[in-house]
Image 1 (cartoon, one colour):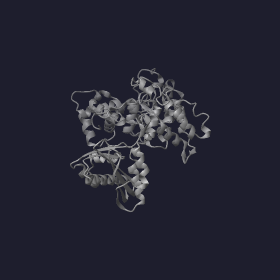
Image 2: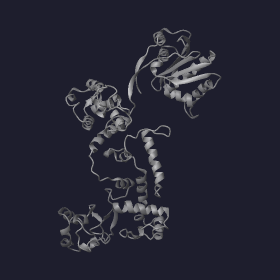
Image 3: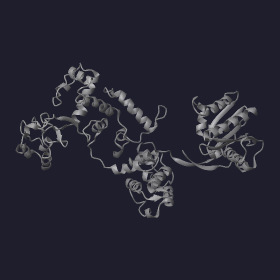
Image 4: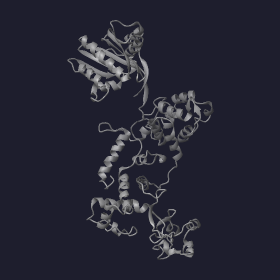
Length: 532
């Protein structure tokens, strides 16, 4: 990337990998790209994420070699390259004309010089013998010929600064003033040609304050867009400065770009036949609708809004509404309103950016005939903290086939969950069960059981013991369930905090969890809001 211009096909693959990572796409699962790549690669202040496009970044890195060509005069590689390719004066571009005998490295350096270094160069005035007065950028990064509007007399464009300076008298204003503005004339009077030390003119970099070349400034030069567009720098500054998790700020960035996958957006992309809100069924599902104007959201806002904001809260346009609330740094519930607003918008939105949400009824389900179901759970008061585990075996009628609890001591929550699984499998094996359904409410633990962990993992010893049981001569199905479907095992784990350390087996239902057991028997359910 930093020595040659790579093939476009390779650079496109790098960009494709960045896009896939950003939106969560894979070979098997393609995701919608909500924001165009040319917007994503803009600076954050312009509504992008500041991710750098591979082709422009490659050119900026190579341009650094071109810059060093005119500054690292004592470097061996600079001397060799200058001699081999007859590098001349930077004003004379004849040595930059492409030739078939060039190596790939020199072709790349020459490309960086043509596309980056020469357009971005400026001069620091010394004796004035190298700098072109009218066509070079040297007077506060100003090119004076642009002020003349192409009306310069013949021969003026080739003049160097020294040609328009008279020792002891200063600038030859009679030749200069007719072609420059009053501001440029005033700027010119602040600059002198160095006739004392006779220092040489120095090549400088116009894109940085200190005149030093940087890859960042070169990239900015390559990607600068002069097309007129709204100035939203203050808006995005508020978005990225709000005190909230990064995922919340990224969500607000999507709001700012107005690309949330609402039904209106789905309809525009021909992914849906309707633009109606699925929650209230009474309005078009725009971004402002799901964040504020849907009756479901209005009820939430009404409950949490400070009295001072109620008058104008529901009257503003989307970007004005978001900006005003993110700018409110007044204290609210041990935080600021800006933070509270950001979290509320993210948590309660109904868009499919985080998946459309809905309420479902969740409860324990009896196993199929011939199978026994094992539910286990772990609990920890802190991570590291006092920890317990519990589990229960039940048949296809919901009858109690045995239960246990384990007062572990102090450990992490995942370790407590794994101890619950281990003792549950141990009891099931001892009871000579041949078909077992294992349900756990920890996706992390389910992943451990299904795919294993490396030998260096802190929990590998217990995962290995569990796998020893799973590999035996029986059938074990492992699945993740919501906590609402695992309430009895959770109750046993919490009940164990009142018991002595060690293992406890229960032939019958303990009184403390009898109500939970009966709820499962009669098939009671509880609502849970999930991503649909």
